[in-house]
Picture 1 (cartoon, rainbow, N blue to C red):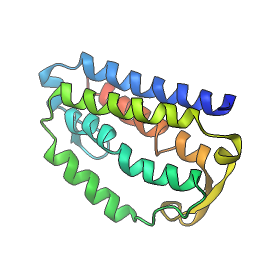
Picture 2 (picture 1 turned 45 degrees about the vertical axis):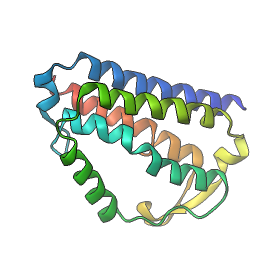
Picture 3 (picture 1 turned 135 degrees about the vertical axis):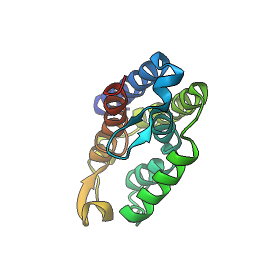
Length: 159
C-alpha cells in the first residue's frame, strides 16, 4: 500500500531469504550443532522461526485491526518455544526451509497491504511490561524481522 509497508515487507523477505540461505549451506552435522542463548540445535532454531509465524501473526493482525494484543506471558511463550525446538531438534533441512518459505509467502504481501495509519497504531504489549508498541515496531522488532535475523546470526556463529 504505502512505501513504508513495502520497505518493511522487503526487509522481512531479506531477513527470511538470508536465514534460508544460511540453512541451505548447513551440512547434516551443522544442523545438529547447538546455537543461541536457548542452546537449541540449528535445525530446531530454524524450524522455530518458521512455525512461529502463526503466533506472531496473532499480534500483528490484532495491532493492524486495533484490537487488544494477545496477553501471552514470556513463561508461556518460552515453554512453547522450548518444547517445539526440542521436538524438532532433528528437523530435516527441507522442512525448516518449507516452513520459512510458507511464512514469507503469507506475510510479505500482508505487510505490503498495511497503511501508514495501521503501522503507526500503538497498543500495550504485555511482553514489554505494558509499554505501547506500534505495529511497525512489532514487524521490525523481535516479532518478525529482528527475530529472523537474530536466529540467523546465532546459526551462522556455529557454522
